[in-house]
Length: 388
Image 1 (tube, rainbow, N blue to C red):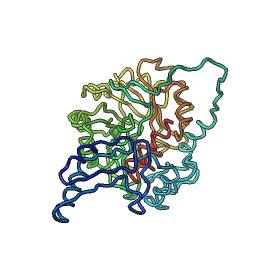
Image 2 (cartoon, helix red, strand yellow):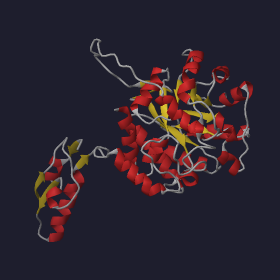
Image 3 (cartoon, helix red, strand yellow):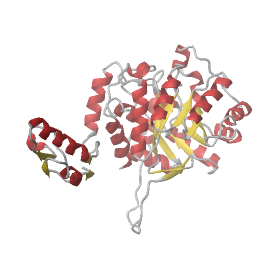
């Protein structure tokens, strides 16, 4: 229990004799097995049973108990629920999510080809070891807060843009619920959710509806469709929803699901990319940068933020892990724009390694997708547990 309010107002309701609380702030409300487990009781009287019940109901309306829904959640519980939702045709929800034993590829939750890029993301992080320094002065303050897109966030951890709940997850959750869960959970955790428009043209309308429910508090990343006017139209529609930033994942030009949906994509040089960037007043993100030269070209095109990403190994096999290429890209950028990264991030240790190599923040995909197979509190817990 985080807070309790309205108790005195409840006691003032006509017919209410007393309000008795059995739980207080910082205590836990257990699962209900009997009346003894209730958080409180209302004693009410009336000339008739109906009158007494109405008084008790009115008193209950005055009381608000705010609870932390994620408090009692354990990651094992998240995994078990995801296995039920996904089935063995989508994702095994392995203890170690590293692409070595996936139930599906693309479409699905796995990677393309032999999944070597998916696996290399994990290997690149595993090769990095942490050497702590214990003999030092005590730190007076530790903060995980960051500034990005003109806003402050409590943590440098955000949900990566994901779509295809029907295509990739066999309908374990609807496209709308998937996007809305992530957006709401990230905002509650002091972070921000990113959403993508996916291969199917109609999915863009779905994410717009989800963004409307959170007053635009999200980042919209679009596939690199060949039709520039359509790209501009989508940027403008996202801007009308007051999103914090828009962008494009350039590596999706050869994304398998785009081909399956007959959606034409196009590679863009600096000049054409600059024209797209100038079509919106919002911060512009380019996701899919894997080389220093692409990072430099992005800056020349006026991009505000880049994301070092190989699309989680879902576009091209035999690519390097993002942790391996991140340092050279950070050196090339030299602090001119923020550099974010995704790929294989499963724990706070992985986040720490990416930050140590110069990333301003990280995006987490598959762990969030696993949590989003159930409820908002599960996604909230997923983000908070990585931070802690």
